Length: 477
Image (tube, rainbow, N blue to C red; front, side, top):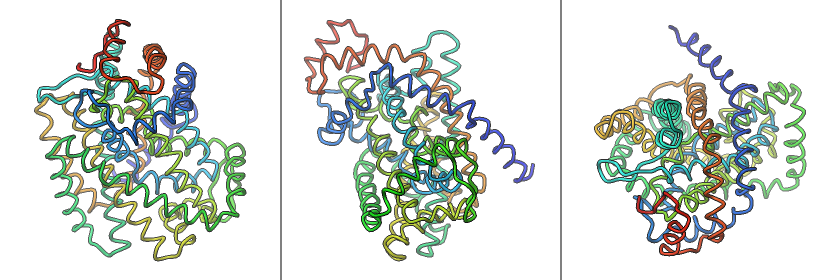
């Protein structure tokens, strides 16, 4: 089968999966259902969650392998990647400025989905043969949903996650690093591939503890540098912001006519691109972040669920917004699909000059993409262990590390289409599971937050609460 035919097949499958009558309504509907059942938790408890995750950082006395902050940065490492830079540009280039609005909507309702899947990741986690805490959709779908259907969903997710880890979490990211370094600094893709091969292999040898230490050290810094650069551009274009917001909101419900080479096609395309790229960026509903959440040292699933929820807020409402607003205010979006690959870099260059603008975007792509590789290596490894047992861990690490090198030196025309399709295949079983388990999530969440609304309770208080309410979960599970 030639490449063009394979591209057509993947594009057709992707169009169906991400079409207006399949995954998009399921994704938004699940987020809306959870928002309602949880009483708009993502809005009412956002401040508490941000304080607990970014300031408190640790749940002293909680069981797990890494701190809550490290679990958050590992999830951020996996999500704040190429999708926040190139993905946003592609969404706006194809779907118009209105696509950014639908990315916001996906993020806001997705915070409830992210909370629920992280809650369940901790709620049903267990300890593996090596003594490490393990959990995620591959466990809570099978264990939380009785019968063969739950087992089917769990295995569907497991296989899809392994496949997706080589697409969204490896090939596209490694290629983005190599391309960025070659275009901006003249570094050969072979050199980039060898360096990434060595760095990835070194970090993965240390497992989740090493990944957590690395991501907690540089993920916050890389996000701050990128956001500050974007804020400088927006400050210089402050007079354009009102018109930019007006365009984003109006275009979300009207579509953009074809001007200046832009290939707009109305509301459906803006919705489709916004939701598809939104989930590519923040992964809410995909279930991946639940794998990192399950490893966190926490005293109760609600506490880690709230911390994990902030990842979607940081990724979409902050980082994606910065990219989208810079693109719209500078006007480079009118170049359309053909310019999507360089749109963000062009926008930064237009805002703060060719030297600084291009350098910030290039370095951000490198660091964002490499951090995503590390985060997804853990997700894929946990899924491989679920499929093949503890002996599947080392072979997966070796194969994953080799694919990083392959992604750096290979032209990947199919990478984005493949990544979108893999995302959809992962999200499908997880979203179905979140709907089925939404009652359990809502019931236990409301009970805990009534007891500890500020997340200030100590270990002994929580143990008494669990005993009094006959809750089956224990921090030492």
